[in-house]
Image (cartoon, rainbow, N blue to C red):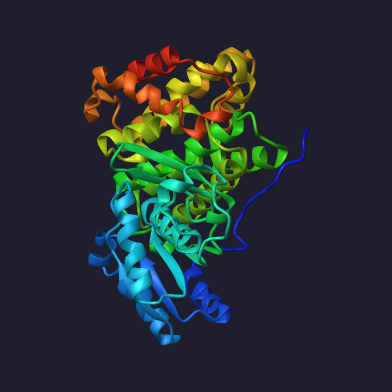
Length: 383
């Protein structure tokens, strides 16, 4: 095995009370004025006010940018960057789920490197570390609070750009399950399936290592045990905390082993139709892994076992099929839509979606090489 690198924020605080610990850490770092990148629903719920109050009590000023869209855009980055510059902020806080985190990464990266966010599409295109970023998570799914992945929709091309850059790794990540209790069941389900997708894709990735395998396997087991309860009873703090750990472990896995064609394809659906990322992943996951099964059947059999299936006596191929069934069963139980067509995806758009998916950096580590026709067929299978 060739030498590998393992990326993770310098400090990661997880568990009940993590937000208060993080505010003290911010004070210790000496920051004075934050640009808080978030979205309007979190402002309306009063959650952002709770954060600014804690910061103010510690002598830290904050400016709020709440213009992040569910699939953050190049325009969101431009608007946030203007606010950061005008107010002379010395660091950035992302507060929310994957969308605010990605938008904040885009803002912080361009603030430090100049140009426009489109300049950094691809792998390690920047020269300088981004402006210091503290990422405070309010969902259990994307792991964007701790990864070097930044996904921004290019409005002119109607595609999601995958920016994979060591310089977008946050300085500090925060996962406090108290911030996750108020999330609705559908969002909990979608983000939970996103975390499962991260872990499965990392496990079968061509760049997987013993470290990423360990993280992915534990993540899958925790999701199988806790996601149903977190969806069913959102105020169950124990289930929420275990899902926070699960999504973080999934992030550790894919941040270093990367992903596969599920994400490469889901990014196109999000950019083209503005669909929820976690739902797209959940729908595509079993279909992409069915395509991958001939070359990773043993690993998929392990997925089935981790998700509670009895695989004793099964062949690797049979075990792989059990994994696909387990993924579909979980998605159905927690209310995930069952077809892309129900989300408005049109068959006539598939060739364009497939072309764009094959240009997505996430597909580079998929365990089985796919042609344009292969990707088109996977999309059709998910319709």
